[in-house]
Structure formats: structure tokens, C-alpha cells
Length: 338
Image 1 (cartoon, rainbow, N blue to C red):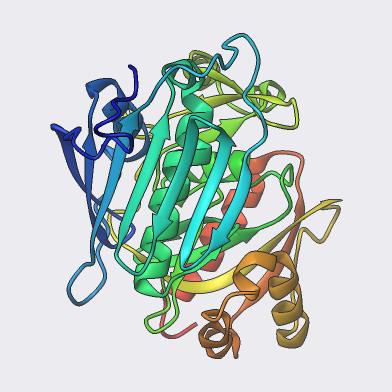
Image 2: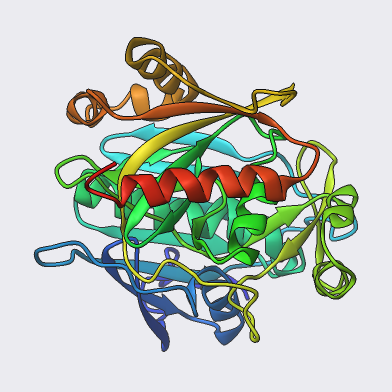
């Protein structure tokens, strides 16, 4: 695909392939100039519940373009992504042919991929496409972007907060298996005005050693999922909870924030759960969210934290024990008399 001197910016190349998807409270139009690019959109969004907030949903557009070959090796992971920003634009750059650029004010984004990057579908989706989706949805609606998982019951949701490796994914999957509503693994978005949480219920990432917690049939299904390699070098199964037959329910609508749950790596012992005082909870939550806490929207989040219930859950010998604690908390949150 050579550059035309008459059209060096490829403005005349019209994207003819489209997907329309509602996620994270926004209506997205994805336009691609090559049908292969829509597979990334399908993996990221299709089949996830179409969450909406009250009021008119923003209309957002992401254009996907297949650029020229760059010589990017396909037998090893791509270069580390670099974040860029200025003049109202936000972007991620991997190399000269692979980048994502968004303009939150206009509600538009561009994802440009080289042919070689299609061999790195996980990185293309996770680091470029999802960046565009998450950033546009959050900035256009004033959402706080949180590094947290979320499960719920009867419209109430609990944020699962912990460092990478704290067990959020394994616990979220166990909650799904036990009938709680799965909202997201570790990328949650909070609307401060309503206290509603949204996310995309697209993947759960599990280490191989987590399979021991599940019965043989479930473990076999998880082990059949594709394997991805994190930037840290850790390999994980990338399980899609949208796949039929589903293992449990996905949150059909945004969930009301009912409490914070801090996951601790300390053994549970005789006291697996303790209530966290409000001042400690607010400080811990803010410390756990350096990106969101640095954004203007964080000031609007503070009133939600006043009087919000918070707990610390220590690691049990089996995630099912922790999932039972979460169910009890959610049932109490949904009971007006509790």
C-alpha cells in the first residue's frame, strides 16, 4: 500500500466497513477501510450488554485504518506503547505505523494499524482500540476511569480494588459462576452524578494455577481459551464470558455503587473480612486510583465516598468463600432494612 503524492494523508480512502455498538453508555460508530479490522471491534465489544445512562447517549466515531507494512516483527511482542497528549488530543504510539489518537471534544478517534500488527491482535485491541473506546466514552460523559473490577446483584455493585495479581479476575469469575452479575474484570467507569458503574464484560484473564479452583468441566473450558502474554511476561488464559453457553450472568445495565472492597493478599485466618473506616477507605481508594484521582472528575467523585460502605477482604483458601462474602454484602445493600 504505497502513499499517493496526491493524497499523502490518505484522506480520500473511504472506510466502507462499519459496526454500530452501544457500550459504556455511548453509541459508537466504528468505520474501517479493511474488513479484517472489524474483528478487533467484535472481540472488544460485540455481545457485551449495551449499557446506557439517563439522557441522550453521546455519538462517538472511531475510524480504523490499515496502513503500510512497517517491518514490525510478528514473532515477538511489539514495542512498549508510549502515551502522548497535547492540543486537546490524546494518543498511544507503538511505532511509526501503529497508533491511536482521540479528540474527546469532537468525539472522534483514529486507530492506525500496520498489517503486521494484526498478528498481535491482543496488543492491537487492548493497547490501541480499547484505549480509544475507553477514553472517548469517559471523557465525553465525565466518567471516572477506575482500575477495579465490579460484580453486582439486583442493580447494586461492589468495586473490587487491588493491585494487579491481587486476585480480582479469579474472584470475579467465581462470582460469575455463583450467579452474581459480572460487570468487568479491571476497567470500570463511574458516573459521579448518578453513582452508576459501567464496564465492558468482554474478558477475564486467568493464570494457569487458578484453574485448580474450578471443577473439571469449567477448568477445561477455561483452558481452551486463547493464551495471551502480558507485558510483564506473565501468560494468562483470555476467557470470554460472552461465549455461549455462558457460565453466568453479565450485568445487563449499569450498577449502583454500593461499596468498596479492598482485596488483601494476607491470609484470611479467622477474620476474612473487616469494615474499613470511612476516612481510611477514602484515602485508600484515592491512592489506588492515581489516574482518576488526577483528573478534574475526581472532585465530583468525593461526595459519593461520604458514608459509602467499605470492607477489606483477605485471601481465603478458595475464592468461593470470598464470593460468598460479596454476595452477603450485596444482599445487605439491596435490603432497605439492613
